[in-house]
Image (tube, rainbow over all chains, first blue to last red; front, side):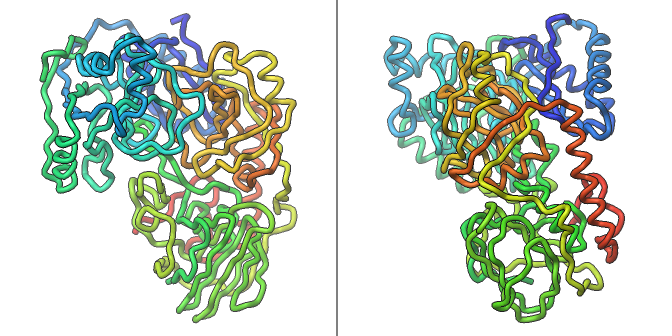
Length: 252
Length: 330
């Protein structure tokens, strides 16, 4: 556990950083620590936010000092015996995407940056299932692991002010979907007609961390058809199952 | 009950925000200036975290068919009650058939109206705060418009006597804002020159700023090797520095995670003053220790408690000033 850093994030934040990688094993340790702390959550802890490779612990500094909190976290880390890989079944959700054009204004940049055709970028992007490592940025935004480095692209130096809901983006070797209209710095390659966040619903989020999802290319006509079904509430997402940690390429 | 005659530039219902959902990517929202909003609630005889109206730059005009009691705190928007000037940072009785009207902020940027009894809009995910980007919370998930009718909660016998905040507790809104910063979590990703720029130079508030973040122009803050990190968690106060080197201070509606290196966090008590900064105002940063930040938090709490001592009557005005008391469910 010597590679774990505990660092400051303002007067009411502690970041437990497990390493600078996107890796299923590292992510599993983040979620394990979150479960340990939330299972015995002292009143002093306000909120936990697990990410790819770190756990943010928000605390009340008028009720516990950073030093005392850090000591408690170290105790959890020390007691975390290395357990074997646990294999569970995960849900795979199919995400229809219309790539390029007005829906994906950066698709051509991503292609030329990687010396590929746009068709090759779409083929690579749709060729595998992605694990939902965390939700963040905006309500229901899934951060996904496992994208091919062959279609990686840098973030925009200056973020866009407005990105439409449903936009699919690439940043570095990550890919994700913008659930609501927001600013953002990712390269946009397409858009889905699905709704990722619905606060009026009993189940407001389309995904949970631990799900997988798979992008499927559709044309503009199908996009409009599905959009109408989503708006009328008649669309049922296409789902399958997969064993966690396995290649989910054939799951749908 | 309150009818909106003119909504102002951006007027929303806010409380202390939607906590507990950051792990799902749900921003906290809530008041931008918690000091002014909390003082408004205390003066109005409410719990400190009750829902208030937050007005931005240009205030609105409101009509009250029934008598009410309210407090106005924050930016001075030249408020008038039935044409007569009101005192900012004070609470007062409003007779039936009154009109409360505001103009442009002559100092600061955001002004708060707390009604005795609080604002009765349904809670969404535990909060009455408006999060306009997702269209949820507050009044139909949006900023107020003309002809909207806002329900005010009932809270027993209404206070009548006017109250004003002690001058000891009045903040000063100038055109220069000094913010205390705790470095980290990624201050190691900046060059020594970059860190020195942050703490020695003066930045200018850009016109591109909103409830999500305040963009700063002027000097650039140099990264050691690129601005991108693997996205991790952040909250209001985080200073992200994108590739162009211009810092962005995250505010109430900020996202829960981000992918630009964070050089530090502005401490909570100082964010209230940044919330009152306008485009063109200057911002400087000074490094701060945990001890200093905790002392500032304690001083903020003490100011609330001292103010509450003078107004401890009515069903919402009593004990629950300490800590984050939630307002009552509808």
